[in-house]
Length: 284
Image 1 (tube, rainbow, N blue to C red):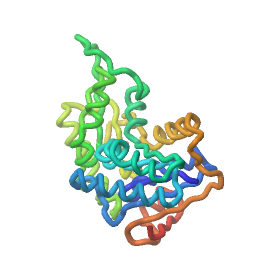
Image 2 (cartoon, rainbow, N blue to C red):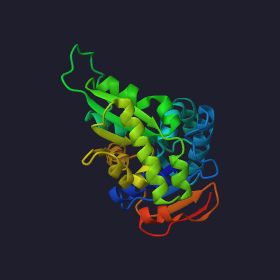
Image 3 (cartoon, rainbow, N blue to C red):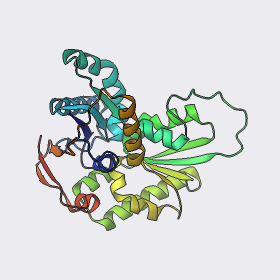
């Protein structure tokens, strides 16, 4: 068996890279829905349908466990699929265990320092210090308000501000130059800072594409601003999940398959630079 990793494009490779480091002997199948990328500006039903199709393809490829390495898919589609589609799909393929997990829960756990199962706190009358957390994400993730809602439930001393970045994932996917990307990132950091009234105390790169250019965000934010890294948080969470659920077999051969619904072949230079070697996708 294998672990499936799904994203609308190459951004999920940032999560995949962390998973490979954390679980080096596991077998992985990565699927990029490049024929339909980016998801960030799509309608909710489109995102649900496309994510479901991607999960079906990964289950058919021998994956028992799928990680949605896409904030937009996790924010908009994951709960719907878990509640309304996956139970029937599991039943039709019994006794094989199947599950879909996302990257938002581990990110929120990392941001709050609290487990997801932590009981939401009661409102407090007075907060001595507010920690300002900035979220850079796609418009669909920002519109879902998942980070604001879930963090507010768990921590009354964290104020969350989201900055929707309408074009950034598309530009990263296309492999545009560093100078152009730098200008876009700096513009979004300035916009978020103006809306908050000051710089954020911490930041989350709430789109896995953005991890590929994390150095540009570090340069645009004030020196020393901590970044909460979704890939590392997700990899740690998946490793713990597999320990708790031995019924899921991640494989042991260290296999790596890369699939795309788009044009197969070698990926752009930005991806190669991030991954550390040329990366070729096969047709899904």
